[in-house]
Image: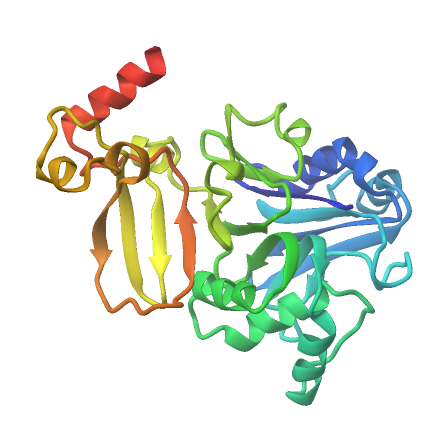
Length: 317
């Protein structure tokens, strides 16, 4: 068990990351580290031992300036507890850094594939395969590279990733591992546990709202300065490589028994009806992966007024 945090905003990220890691130290104290985006490079600082060692090395974060970053406190599972195996891990080209909580069950198979393709490994961890997969798949689209890399992973994981080409963005991904998003004004967060966020975030969104989909991915960025309703409410799914759908309604009240009811003797819409609006069209084939790319409550700008009223009444009731 490890703890991870991420932040992007207008203030220095390192002190926020260190504060969050201190609250997550119960999840592991073999080593700790942070990565902060600094223009076209990522500054990584990591140490063996407790968070206090990292505070001393970074002068409480003052030696690692930058407004976007990720952090990790480690309970060693793959590889000895030392500085080399400590997270974050960086790609060979220095463009990406990753923190990870969980276990990648097929990491040896992926490691051998990446070694054959010329990628260099510095650590003994299962995590390092993730950052090299992202580098391998990257062709200018940060989110798409992370989605492709995640689709290769077998196991349970929560990830935080930063990229020099997207200096104001942190990507957070989870599959069967805890991860919480915190939404602030002009700043956003993620963490393994809500205790790391409560001092900073005005509201929290739990990935468990959409836990049945694999893998789940969210982009946190410093913009916009305020939290618009569509960010809070919109839920978007990617089917296959390029079909993007926005969830407009979950369930539909059966006001009158329609032809479907009289034909089938039942109406599944109130229990199982899920309605979408196509934002990007394309072809969907059996077996295509389904990935959540934005989280929300199942409504959007296209949700019918009567459905919004039903949702409001249900919440108030």
